[in-house]
Image 1 (tube, rainbow over the protein chains, first blue to last red):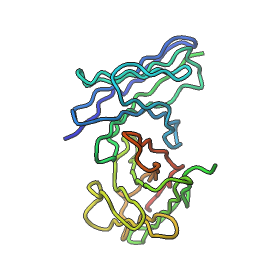
Image 2 (cartoon, rainbow over the protein chains, first blue to last red):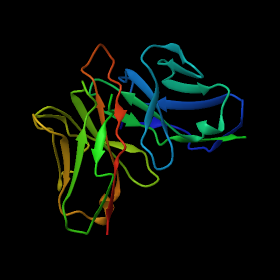
Image 3 (cartoon, chains in turn orange, yellow):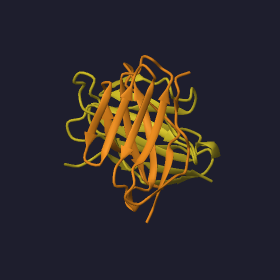
Length: 110
Length: 116
């Protein structure tokens, strides 16, 4: 069973702090990893993707991938109340279908 | 540049009726995926299609569910004889032609199906 595990949260951080979201995956064949943000009642929005070990930065977001440890993380710098949402981690392999974690709910306190 | 389009956005059906959900991928995208999100649960893959071909339907329930992506027109997810357990948000995603490992999927707004 291919699984992606996330802590459901809520993860609560003060405004301006760094939010750190983590994800582990079980399928060593996974090649690609994605972070989606989902506001309540809305559809998932792609915010980051990473294919290689190491860090990838885009604005306030940094994705980190460690294939040896089967671990993916998302850092959000200078967190804003508008970042409050559920963050979904997903993995993909040759089949292209994505396997999603259940999501981590982030709350940024003003 | 229009995103992924889905309609209807909300659909109410009585038990035993049929539900048809439509999805038009982003311009330039030739791959369509359907996912289901049950209340308070994660997204689950259902089916992956290209034009006139079902590539992977490993996540589709064996009965009552079918999908197509005809040469012309949107992709259709069809649920026959709906039951209350089918009530969920159904999301369509699309991706561009494969380039290396790049196949980011972009989601439409979803169809929220309620079975009464």
